[in-house]
Length: 154
Image (cartoon, rainbow, N blue to C red; front, side, top):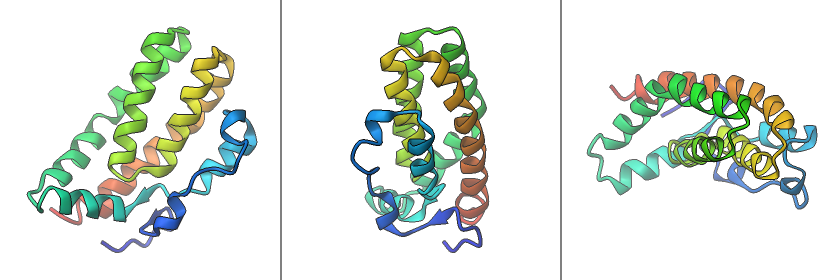
């Protein structure tokens, strides 16, 4: 799985956590900038998932389903944040965080983690600001998965 896009990385070092104090300042420009340093998709995560599933094709199907559900998943999260529905927003953002991490979407998983912290603080205004980045990076993550993993392995 080779990529021509610098957003697609197999370097495990890029998966490191944010610097101390950044997570506590969730949603600040500095924490968003730190999340932006992560790759859109880490191929090593997908390779590991393939190995764990004994190359059965389930990893590719999971990635395909993840990409197909992006618009619905984003719309659900955006509506919950816009309506300041804490319970629904937390459910949606935790789902996004976990599934993004499972397909190697490190940048989006980190943004979801930051958004989760903002929602837990009840700062839906800052949540709206973060949703702009979630939309952008989510679309790019799906594009990377489709171009460099799903289509490449079909």
